[in-house]
Length: 299
Image (cartoon, rainbow, N blue to C red; front, side, top):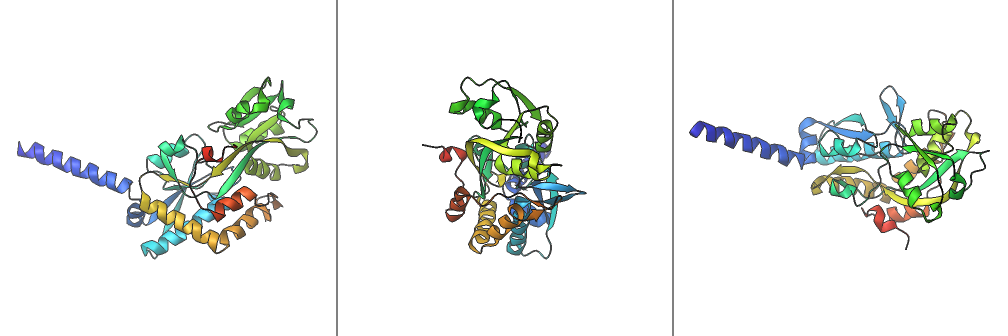
């Protein structure tokens, strides 16, 4: 009897230790000497230049967070591992422990808060649509009989369909595997419009062969707070991440990062995206919070 009981006790202890570490990301990072960042390959806030190089406003902000974590943990070195994520797998990769901190372009909403936690909001997004400049499309009503692209795993088309001005508008939906693929559908004529976060649309236009061929048009479909994603029930790690972001806001370094990635020429095209800091994002920085999208709904 004793051996089975001992084995069971060891199993329970191991499970308890694993569970404790799963909810103690700081201990996990310190023990491993590394942190895994979830990054995107074609987002406006995080994207790849190829060869394992990831850049962008949220990517660089996350790297500053890591530097602050390194100081807090008293580590001489803290390795950053970059894990590309997609709209479909980003939440599972955070919850299963593969990714410690996801800083791509994820909307903080009530449904997602059931599975993950969010840092304070660092970007407030407006969902719009991009079309070819000569398309004649200027509004939701002009999408009747058209084909609209969006990215698998995102909520943009659902948001479009729920818009009050979409009543009676009949359009076909097509889905790209990522944002670059969705934009390519527009570029090659397989779609008449691409509906997505404004920053993502602007970034893809800036990387197009002929940026002047495209323009962002139409009503603002939704206002969404974008934030870094982390595991639930880990208040110490969330506080460390939030404290770093608040420091970056307070000392002006986050504003400098924003200017670098949205107002100055950026790789690989060395063109400026040209999205000035919005009033909504300024307000989120002035009053740091992790409120979900539903709190931003227009009254």
